[in-house]
Amino acid sequence: MSAVVDTLRLTAEEALALVERGDVSPAELHAAYLDAIGERDAELHAYLRTVEYDGATSIPIALKDVISTKGLETTAGSRILEGYVPVFDATVTSRCRQAGLSVLGKTNTDEFAMGSSTENSAYGPSRNPWDPARVPGGSGGGTAAAVSAGLAPWGLGSDTGGSVKQPSALCGNVGLRPTYGTVSRYGIVAFASSLDQVGPVAKTVRDVALLYRIVSGRDPADSTTVELSEPVELPTSERLDGLRVGVPRQAVALEAIEPGVRAAFHSSLALLGELGAELDECDLPLSFDYGMPCYYLIAPAEASSNLARYDGVRYGRRSDGATYRETVERTRDDGFGDEPKRRIMLGTYALSAGYYDAYYGQAQKVRTLLVREHAAAFERFDVLATPTSPTVAFPLGDKAADPLAMYACDLLTIPSCLAGLPGLSVPCGFSEGLPVGLQLVGPQFGENALFRAGHAVERALELDLVPERLR
Image (cartoon, rainbow, N blue to C red; front, top):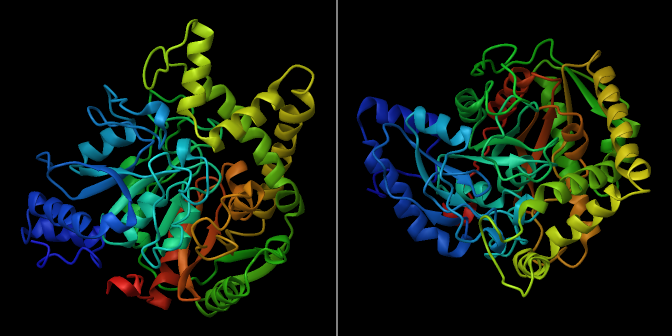
């Protein structure tokens, strides 16, 4: 079957058409992807576990291992949840199943989605299909690597500060972080609850829009969810006449942006203009001066609260001690890796008596200013454009010993996440033979404008996004 179905190039939309025409059955398609995983994933380690065909009526999907799946181990990339098998599906899992999708498997992730390289997984790092000596990004590197290498037609990840957008950029995929509240978080292993959002990863903008259409909408099990303000539109236009695109000066001026990334980004801006968009500069000084420190107070504080539930009593790993306190201490020491421990300690300190107002409380006030700053920009513009990541995929181990260097990978994605805004990463070129991503940010519920812009760029460039070594 693998020889019949070219999973390397097959988009989700094309796969759906194959099944609808009867050219291939859902079981055969699922088997083709399992064959591809068997051939290529030993090198990439995109998956933690795979699933046999379950009688579904449509195409397969890969799920990041923070998304609960009934009867299938869900570890969030951590030893502390090793052996945890949910008794229920996350809402997004249920919606995928209701749409007839079959779950291919659970993809690797930085532990509790904390990282930018998928090197923090307790089960070993994933690798980039373009160059296995390099990272696929994070925290959702497993999903991004799977889609890029033809090991899934599409996938779902989670994005707190860039964990869908950044790995999509590094692996040459399209990735959407939706407006906060448009996709249910019920059944998602929590990192930072005011930031976490589930988003699609796929080969094309239309594929991403199709999957967003499936998983979005209000969920009674998640009180933060809302109905979409307008239906999800599948983009068709290859022109951008009348679209107003803002280019934040502070983002473009960042010294951390590699020359090759900067060159691809400026080429993208020129292309947007050629397609009919109206471009102008804008200012987001607070967002790019204070976004990073603001995020690394709020996210660890919420992580400290959320991860307190892992005590070895109810589920997951348990390291026995002579007393309850000793049992909890040993369980957390044995079960959590270095990065979750680092963030738990940072967050606990920021929430502690005498420091709450000075750190967490102050960060929330700054966050409000970031929301207002973006809102002011969207009075003039329909979309904002920046690079997605300041660098292309970097070598494994290159930043592992320097947490601040790793955190800087999300310099460009964090501000819009703090503001709860949708962001789309679209491949826009190459540097050093590796993909570069263009980040398009919209106002709340502005996904359709992002799809329109991303689709036009995609069609104009017509990049070959199958990793060269796999062609």
